[in-house]
Length: 409
Image (cartoon, rainbow, N blue to C red; front, side, top):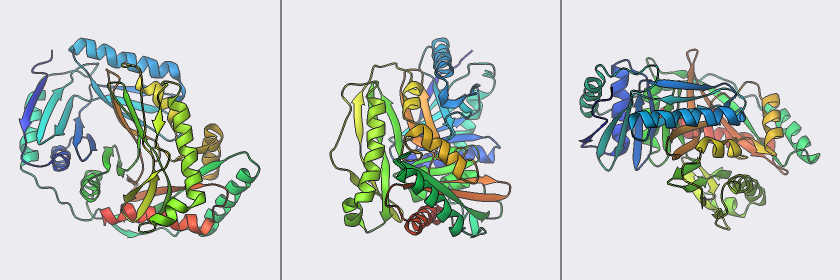
């Protein structure tokens, strides 16, 4: 039985700091945490009341509807909105997960509210409030400033293989099978002694306070790209495509190749959202977003949808976007999987939260590091369109790798 469903605490530090404090407090107690930290608000989620495994990811509408209905059923049991974290890999046919945490710490405007969500097969209220108070007490005594979490780079960039991939991609574009395809490559680093993914989250959160920092499993990242926000029926998407090194704004805005690449992404999202709304709109010209050593073209797309609509249904029409896959979507996903050396897994997938009312905050899982097999992997990608040059695109992947490694070194 649920006791004291929500409590609110005053906190002395800023919202981004609070997320870092809670993540490190959970780490000290040996608890797994999932976190989303933004400049205005953050969420740190602890424990697992239930986890819904979507065997076919975003490709099965029936599974997506069943999952949302289950979330709504839990909402009825608690008598209020239930929040869940979501993680979907790049490949829309691969399994995704929706997790209903036992504890949700939501921080905004120097206040942290604690939600207790004991529902589902793992519901157990014994000691949950004591744990929440202990986490907060430890968190507010912390000033997390972890040292470097990665050391030297230990891979050798394979320019030849990259050039061959780009050449094959350009051949597909020349044959008019594709308008665009996004190719990625990885850089492997040696983790610093004792470094953890939680510490990587803290460092990225500090280094990129205006981005959406996230911690999901063995991934930590700082995503600049909002795929889908739904707030009481108001819908927003902020796709990025077209990239140059910092300081080259005029070149970026005047680049025919970059603006064409960006337009493909905006068109794809606009057409997808138009299936749910008749008032989707965006500015005629993109703006420029700076992220570390690189700058991107960005467009804000807005509109309204029916309140209570399943956000997973909307997401399935958008993801993966042309910003990380290509156009047309189905064929570009197929070719990415064929051409790249290893599966992307969560890289370029979706991370974020949804709730039982239909609200959502969902981001591309970009600019991240994955800790695996005593290594730290940073993966980045670039859009290939007609006129792309393998050498220039390789340099862009290196600049994006630098944007992550700089925060972690």
